Image 1: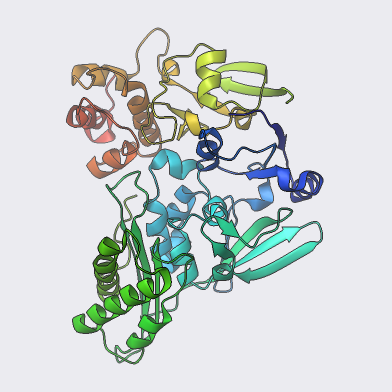
Image 2: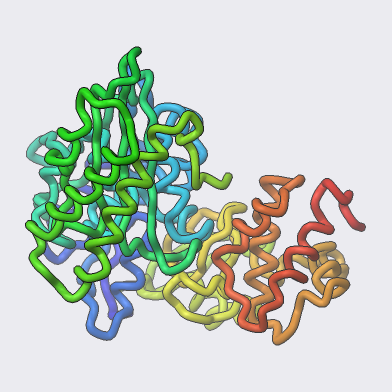
Length: 295
Length: 159
């Protein structure tokens, strides 16, 4: 690693002061599972100043109140996959966290880092966007809130200014009669980066008609988005295999409309359609909630 | 770049050190302290050869920045032995021929130690998940899982 100045901050005020002083030279460090690799790559970026926020107590934990869940950015993937309230109220998020890396990575890696690193394969982001999560960015000048989906500009680029720190991720608990699914396709089960993923949930009414649907693919679009064209096909309908197949095809079409035909399209075009169908089938099954979560 | 002072406990022994910040915990252990039991493999968090316990949790030492261990406790494979006696887990690895070339062994032991600390009755799936971040290229996984299973509550702690 190239030399850098290291500042360990203990509070948000200290973080803001350090970021205000060092501006674009500063890099914010949390779990380090992405950054330490990047800093040692021969052609990677290296920071002049590292602001280590991992000891800021107010950025730790998972808080629930009034049907809302707030993830603090330093919550680790292990915490997310094992916290009862997440497993109950947003099981597909727990499933996504449990699919990241291996225990060593999940014990260190944070949800805030996963969000701010902005890699298109970040596994916690598709379920959070499906949940309609909002994020709070805070600087010395004040704080601002935005939909997570609007944070992203392009792969590895967010709207956050250099003096801003992510301080919270908030979403509403999934409503009753809702089942969710997260499916990830990697080269093997452990330690693999998502080639493609899908986060989805379906809410049904008492007559088993779908009244709300969310489909958010990962590593498919240049930036994450709900595929509303496919979601609309589901509203007012009863779950069925032909409907889910058609939805998968629609997502595939929309992906190509956004990305054009690339070297990977020949593979991704049929595969994303199948993943969407499988995710929706999982949502339609009574046991389709926690599949993939191992411990 | 300025050196910073850190206080830490490694394998039960207290250390106060002045270190450069641009090094990993792995480099600190192997190069500053000569604790070479922790192996250096891929250095990108994929092989698990450098697994150590940080406050009791398994982590890749290659992905922890050295100053981040200030005030925290580390356990490496050298810390498993107590009063001149190997840890039951180490004995079990030998009994089950779970060691071939030995390069993955320190990391495997530490991942196994972590799961046994949190789940004394870990089942097969939990054990396999616990070592899913540790690669063995001699393909000895079956013996490794058997060795760990031997130490779970199901079979009683082996002394």
